[in-house]
Length: 180
Image (cartoon, rainbow, N blue to C red; front, top):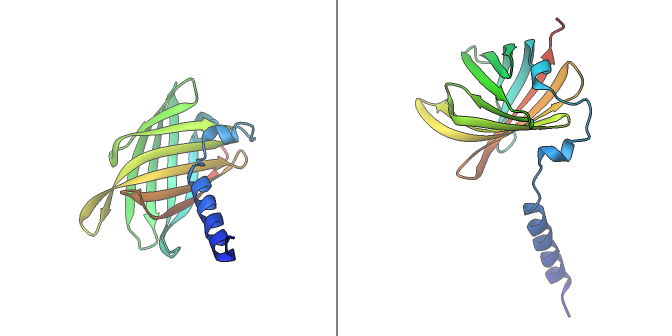
């Protein structure tokens, strides 16, 4: 006979094993509306407000971003100006390339290699490694970024940051597209 403690332990192991095997993919959102078209949403000026939380959930840094966006055919430029709560500023300029199957490739000066993305329905999954300056040193940190289009003006973004497979924290952003 199996004791109640043994049964509870086996149940926990079963839950852990099955939860490790499930991974979100953009196709999970294929039927979600409104459909995300990056060329439409990121065209003109987009404002964003965000925060970085460490792995305990403590807010470490808040920021605002103004993004000036333009496209020439299937190539887009997202010119981002960050202003942090401590008064510091940062600039990042993304160059995006759209592919017919909904995939995107992106580059920026502080991105190691290329960022890869895939759209499905109202969602974009964006994965990349960022060369992140911290206390005078540069750390290559992986980002697993999920963006969800809520309506034609609002998009929400949640990114999990990790290094060597360990979760470092999260970045949360709320985007608002300015009316043209």
